[in-house]
Length: 318
Image (cartoon, rainbow, N blue to C red; front, side, top):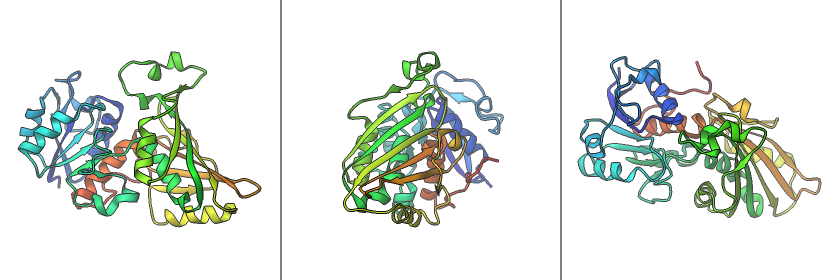
């Protein structure tokens, strides 16, 4: 029986569509309203076919959203747009759960950082959760188990499909301009670089790029080692860290954006160590719209609402 009501604010984007599709299959959540200025009046089932046939997109102000009687809000808004909605909900419904998919609250200590593998106990029962970035999820899950062994900054080189650049037209999501090439997001000070460094408490350098495929991403993480280590030692540390985690899979082969596409899992593999044991590299791949965003949001909702963490998601798509 669906007995928990929630609203999805700003569901026009690619992540919002994936989130609606997952929520439409969830046995405990009823999506009470969905907002989008551009799609106002159109049926939600056009974007998420399993949704309630009577549900339509609405154009609602922050105050109008806060006035709705729901248990939780998911803010699927562009970066920089969530503040009026958070303020309105704080004033009108302070006990309601908010999961913010944007980067706006990832550095706010009043909010819980919603990375389940690393913050599960803190997420449980929380009422203000900042969903992590897709690149940041891939980078930190690969880097954290290696930190006891590394010396100096951890480096990451990322390549993402253009869905990661959102729906607002730009060179970063134009397949014609991306054809036969890759485009750097930022050469220094990318937001996910700061996010990863903040979360793992270690210096990192990150170079994200966008490529002419639609979804999925990879991050190659590399670092110098404090003392010589073998591949077996580091694979063992990685495997032990994620033993029992159903949505992180450590594999032998190098994962690719294609193999991670349409999956809820994060794939970590291809770990290699230099002949002298001084340098390690490993590759992480995930679907930026699922494991990097919508799947994690549903897991955060479940944990905060004291439901089974994987309710509504699984390591496969049915």
